[in-house]
Length: 260
Image 1: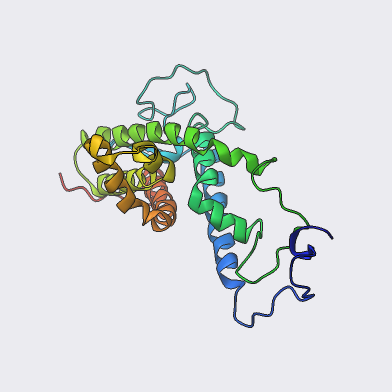
Image 2: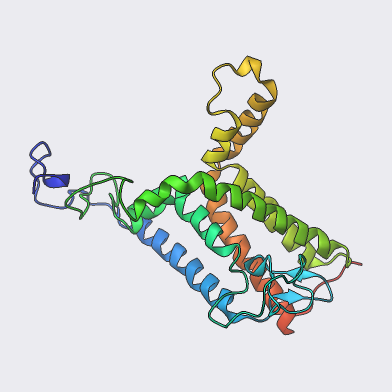
């Protein structure tokens, strides 16, 4: 082996690591967390029911925007310009691929799944199993370079989710409205805390004093950016909880708590 951990310039240690602590635990928990969300989101995206409560205007973000004639009444806030779709195409197919791309190419998630899934490396002072390293110059990792473009679409989807939450408020106020609004606020925080957003705001400025508005925006986004990891995981949780709440109300399993 002439590259990677077996390169002549690397220490000749046959053991994968000399660490005695549970270095494998964080990668394991990351894998379990990501797999749990992927499994839940996949099942719900293809379920095709219990995603809208027409009476209260609740619409799960997994099905927004719903633009097909297959959509249930009350779920098409932007009309139905698309014909009926076969069951193997999720009704939220317009936004879901871009949101998946945004998450996969996110700077934090790169760190998370590079260590847990790609194992490059799984932990500090632990040899990775790859014989060579090409960085993000080949498939599939070269797709990471498209992160900024996924960010633009994610920004638009955040606007759509906000519109959905506002539409629901026109039906009155219930616990579901608070769930939708909390999810939207956290999604905005995660989206705006993105490293690409921070760079767009002020990353290429040479003189902050000449651009006070962009400098202010860069400063605020930088404060959010510090919490990007926490927001990344929190929004996975709120997406599941929001969808689960809408599903339970839509299916009749529970009743929505109405305030007025």
